[in-house]
Image (cartoon, rainbow over all chains, first blue to last red):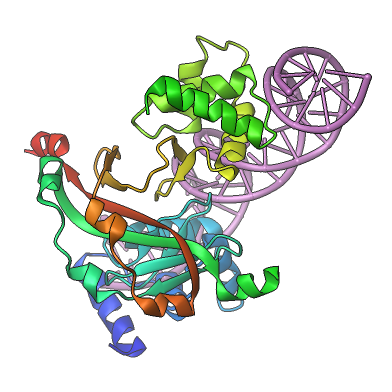
Length: 145
Length: 145
DNA sequence: CTAAATGCAAAATTTTTGCAGTCCC
DNA sequence: GGGACTGCAAAAATTTTGCATTTAG
C-alpha cells in the first residue's frame, strides 16, 4: 500500500467505525505514517505545531487512544515512562538500543508464523505477539570506543 | 534455587557491586521475590508498609532503579503508564490479558534457544529477547459471557 | 442540526530531585 | 568515620478530565 492508499484506507476505516475525519485526526495519523521513530506524544506535538498551531497535547493523547482502540495505530511496548506510537499494524519485531533508546522495526517472517506451545491454551486465547530485542546499536557501539 | 538461596545470592551480589545491604533494600527485594504479579511501585509500597511503616515511594523507585541497573531485578515491558517489576531474571515470556491486565510468566524453551536472523547483526549486538503475548485470559473470557 | 471532537485550563497520576539526617561497612 | 542510602518535601514529567465552543456528517 502506498502512503496515499493508507490515508484513504484510514479515512474509510474512520467512517466505517463512526469516527469523524477531522483535520487534526488526519494530520496526526499522517504524521505518524511519515515517522519511523515511534514518536512520543510530545514529539508528535512538536512536529505538528507548524501545520496546526492551535493543536494541544490532550487532543493528541485523546486521538491516539481512540485510534488505538479502533486498531488504526499501535502503542509500542517499552520500559520507558512515555508512551510511544506507530502506524505499522502488521506483526513485526522491535529492536531497542539500550544506550540511545532508538526503536527500529524488523521483519522476521519465521516468527510471525511459528506455532505457539499448546500449553498456552490453558491460560486463554492469544490474539497478538509482541517481540522486542534489546541490545546496543551499531552507532552507539562505535561511540563507546 | 530456593528463596533462601536467592536472598543470600542477592546479598552477595550487592556486596560484590558495592551496594549496601540496607534493611529497605532487602525487604523490597524479598517482597518482589514473593510476588508473582509483577507489581507496580505503588503495590510494593502498600505491601511493605506493615513491615516498614516509614518507607517512602521514592525509596522504592530509587531502589528498583538501582537494582535494575545492577541486573538484580527487571523492569517489565508494558503498554501501561505505570512501571512494573519482577525478580525472575531468566529469559521467559509474559502473557498479558487485554481485559484485566494480569501478567503471567510462561517458559518456552524453544524460543530461548532459537537463532535470530543473521541480518539483525547489521543493526548491532542483541543482548536480550523480550516476548509478550497478548490476549484474553480464561477468567476474563468466562466473565464476558 | 446534532453528536462528536477540540482547545483551554486545571487536576490527577507517576516519577524524579535536593537536602538533611541516618545507617552500613 | 565516611560515603552511600533514606525519608521528607517539593518539583518535574506525563496523562487525564470538565466544560464551553467548534466542526463533520
